[in-house]
Length: 365
Ligand code: UT7
Image 1 (tube, rainbow, N blue to C red):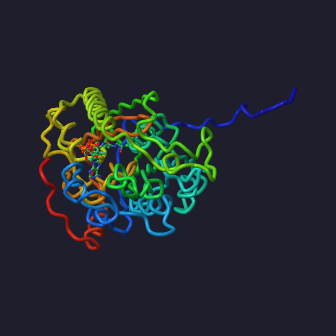
Image 2 (image 1 turned 90 degrees about the vertical axis):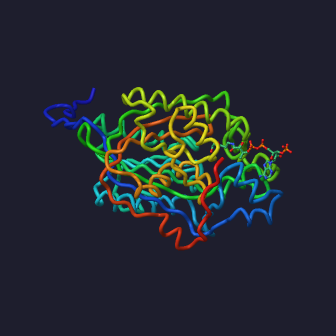
Image 3 (image 1 turned 180 degrees about the vertical axis):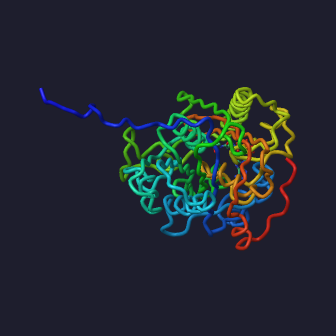
């Protein structure tokens, strides 16, 4: 038996449990290589007209040679931290399906590059729902008093896992990163995260997947392209995405005490403009209130919601009500609500616009 005084007369950590968690900073980053629908027309059996009318996407961005998820995540995080006034962060959550390596997680590398010190840092895998999942965990971490200030990043490099010859996926996905900072606040303060609703259904895991590369099917020299690359059963995903995002949105709205008519902006995962229109329609929200960013960057998976927020930040007014919702592989889905805070955001789009040919207005779908 060892004598120990570990628990004797030691000051217990005093956990500060705030009454609310608020969004305090936001930033986004998109890489410079632009891949337009016309570029894809030359490589695949597809057309600009088909992609525009079936998805609403005109263009997307691919990471440059050697550019990895941590590079984009670090840049988006720098902008989010600057937007929040460079606070001390004590937790980093990185939502991603495309970490730099299978092992270790990418979040510690990002935290280190940001000079955050020995903070807690982990990756979260929920594919396109990753950002909503991560934001919900950050909210809970601050509310519990476990952490004070959380950096939440959604970053993905799908160009590394899509088969460039697969027209079912190559036309949809792009690369990018978005990040937010959340911390303690007061009830009713603009920026408050109000409610979250999260779900999964692993019986549908085959709808969206990369079959090889894990413990079930390690990659070998004989691994086929079909197993090595990302695959998606688009039609079924479309149907489930609409139903799941609508159901989850209703639950989050109810818990927030909001009606669909109260929502100023619907910021849904940027998968397909037809999906966004349907979700808005099912919920009874004016489709004009659905934020569209996919036309210029495609589906950026875990980055899509924070990138859409950063892109549209100048159009949001302080105190406006935002509904976030996403659906992705797993399958996973969820929704969250917040009011818009008084923050300054470096506009990733402005930089994007300087480098890119302007897109025509999205077509009605
Ligand atoms: O991020 C996670 C969540 N992901 C999503 O939410 C994606 C959900 N799914 C979708 O967005 C859509 O299902 C797609 C954009 C993937 C496909 O659109 P769709 O309207 O469901 O097309 P489809 O698969 O029903 O195909 C319609 C037709 C077919 O031809 P036939 O059989 O009618 O002659 C396809 O072969 O369009 C053809 N097609 C294409 N044609 C040109 C399928 N892909 C293409 C293509 N270019 N890229």
